[in-house]
Amino acid sequence: MSLMDNLLGILRVRVKRGVNLAVRDVSSSDPYVVLKLGRQKLKTRVVKKNINPQWEEDLTFTVTDPNHPLTLIVYDHDLFSKDDKMGDAAIDLKPYIEALRMELSGLPEGTIITTIGPNRGNCLAEESYIRWINNRIVQNICLRLRNVERGEVEIELQWIDLPGSKGL
Image (tube, rainbow, N blue to C red; front, side):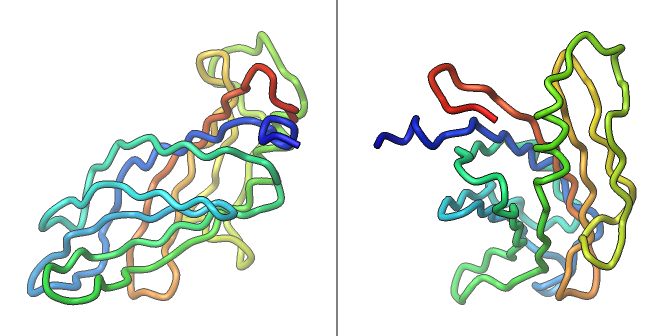
């Protein structure tokens, strides 16, 4: 059995920016983000001395099980000691996967397919919209970090179909 037999597609996660992140050094932080999906783990670059970092980085994951949550952990990079944790969040991919399975096409630009509201069971800082943008289904998410005094991280989800993969 090859990877392609179980592969549903590729999830591209654009880590956009952090907002009002916690201070972990003297007056600022050197934040970076670690994303995990199943056994895969990817990270952004470190942004020096900034509690409102702009990453604008695309990280891509192969998806074999749509039930795995995407987890996000923000760290403060330290040169001489263990990196400090600056909060975490989890993203349920099921609403996004459900929208993809609708096999939509030709919608007007910006059409809202689904709206997910913040609640105690998720890490959303505000409503998240799954939209039709540039002939693709895209979800923009603003996450409120847990286990920390403050901070939010904005990301965007985009799906890439792979020829020869199982598909959704």
